[in-house]
Length: 96
Image (cartoon, rainbow, N blue to C red; front, side, top):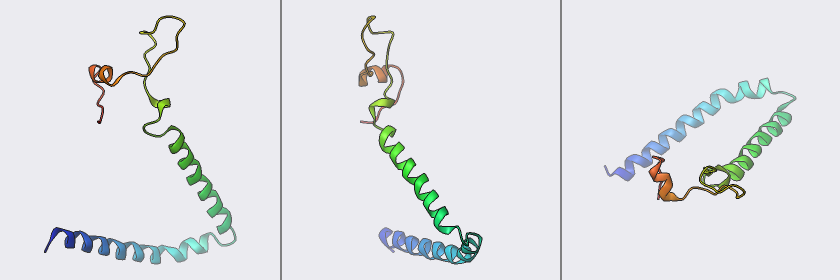
């Protein structure tokens, strides 16, 4: 067998297992949420929306998370993000 075929078979088996799991728990979930399912869906959609907005706002690669060096700045000027070379000097791993 070729590696791509093994990967495709793994995906198919994982999909079948997931479908079986959903079929097993769906009746209990629907029964427990009877009468409040729309409210619960709205709450969970709101939670995921907040997480997505937070990730997009302050997620990886955003300037708000960049380290600053206040002690190297003359008094009266704003701190600036560290340059990639100074990050390497401090032992912080950077991916290029």
